[in-house]
Image (cartoon, rainbow, N blue to C red; front, side, top):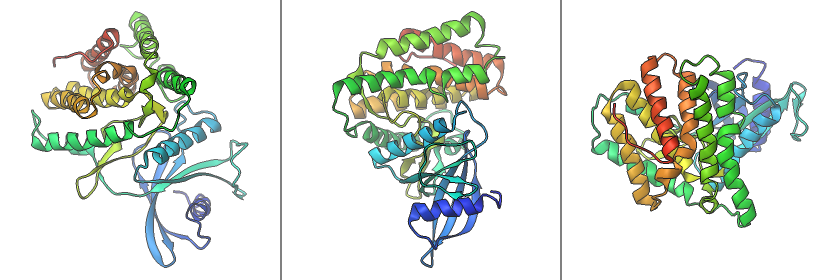
Amino acid sequence: MSRALRPSLQRVLRKAFGDSALTITRVDPMSGGFVSQSYCVTVRIAGKEQKAFVKKAGGDFLGLERQEDRLSGYLLSQRAMDETHARPRAIGCFRSQPRGFVENISPLSAEDDLWQVQEYQAGERYLARLLSRSRRHIEKEDRDEIHAIVEGLVRVHQTKTGIRNPVQRASLYRRALRDVLTHPEMTLMMFDQYLRKSRILRGSFRDAYLIEMIRVAEHFGRHDRRLALVHGDFWMSNILFDHKQRPFFIDYSRFVHGEPGMDVGEMYAAFVWLAFEHQNPYFQELARYFVDRYVRVSGDALVRRTAVTYIGFTGAAVEAFCQHVPLATRRKFLQHIFKCLQARRLVSFSL
């Protein structure tokens, strides 16, 4: 972090913790995140040190060209964490200006810096853990991890939303399905900014792929009674294990409320991608076991179908960011995603 930003960060943290004497003792950059710069910040409060996780809206817009888009993203993330009573807890969203901290966040200017402050919790990323293993088939350790992850996800999905108006519930549900296509960070942005030169998602297949995504959103729109709290970006990189091997989730994003299958579908598609990328049935078995376990714990058999509401975006994101993987592998993965979209359900595949 540049020295010029440290005074702004200190003002933000003093406001967040309600301590005008708070001082920053250490700032450690953290990896990950496309639209935010992340830091683990050590502060001294009343003679004691504690840590905070801080995100600052970064220079890679990824569809969030308007300052209001970025603020909306942080506020939605905070609302999701608040409503699910998630830990680590969100502390607040703030803006700072070169002239000093401004509490009123409206209207925004291009010179404003936007921040989100959360509790800091150390953990090991599930993705790193999976990639460190040299296995061809799942073992008891894998099943135990999936059990714990699924139990946490089901708790999120079964948390009461507090939204009782049936018209509002129906509207929010259909909005979430549309947002998979139209949200500033999602599918249409991906096609516009990253997939213009794709060798797979082009021509008639590109058109058919997007048409199926639209049809999926329309097809499942009638299931609005399923509206639930959702994570919004549920995959292995946003799942961490603490020192007691308990999973916790980070980076709630984009939706707050939506279809539970969106979270299940993203995780499933991420497992499937790893299976194709590494040509390893281990990840294929994890994909199957994760969905089966979710159905068993939640009692939600329809999720095998509604999971396709999100996977079209996952396919596009993989094609955008995994160009280093051989073309034939990416093509086979996208063809599987397309078959699921067409079938309106998760279908089996072979490596």
